[in-house]
Length: 390
Image (cartoon, rainbow, N blue to C red):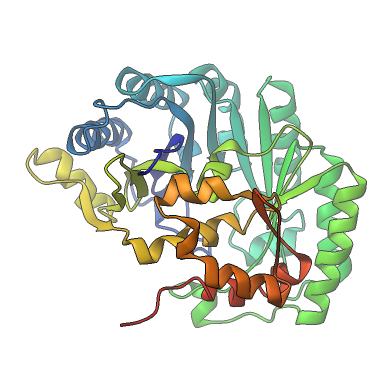
């Protein structure tokens, strides 16, 4: 029997001013005016159809968090975001302490809207800084400069948000160790409650994949991480996830729900969802990817927004659970595995015993804890939970 976990909502805004060469997200460069009003109405109708299809009102769960991602959501007006959030709350109740995060560029135009987003109900803004160095920003295809990034962070402090995040990359093209750490020093100086500090990876179907830049070697990457981690720790940040650092009390609740194998609805172009049901089913959903196709579903009331729906089979659930959970530094309660997968501990007993013998995990009567060795060999650990091919 499954115990449906906390419910979150992901909202995807697909448009950007231009496509960055490293980006493999479902984003589309703006070629004309964004159909803001039409898209907001489509998002709300998409949500209506999910509520009806999955009978979410039969056993209502309030929304624990909302994440508005992209693309560049800050291309949508504050009035549009207010309309969207009001429409969502009319359909699904919010928990009193709901976290509502919105991604934003630090460009001057978007930053001027921050106060409006807060008034609309946004409690947390994630600012895509990536680097403070002009040459690196240009290589990454970013359209803001260092001063705009600094001003955006300062503004986020001033307007009374519950929290905000700075997104920062390292391991950039031709980046030295000193350059990477100087970027991190600048971010720490701005004192955000939360820092997402992650290594650039080259993903398929990106410009960098077809024209690969020269990236730092593995030794330099390790030095950057090791020295950077020390800087963050000394500045009072706690690593709670592979690339997530926060001041105490400022972890991203939405991302924690992902990593803890929680449930989330996904609305908007190409968005993903995961839902658990008391009857034992777990499904994953994907919505129509391209804005034209997605908006066509709004114009044609019969056509669904849903692109695919997959049932997560029992043998797939251990891998899916641990793939998420082992991103976190915290211990994993054994009861969480039982509640969110609907499986007993006997389903993974052999693999857990192997992981203990390999030194990848520690356990006590109630929980598992990934070890430092387990973090280093995370891929090997996760592969062990993959279902056997038939």
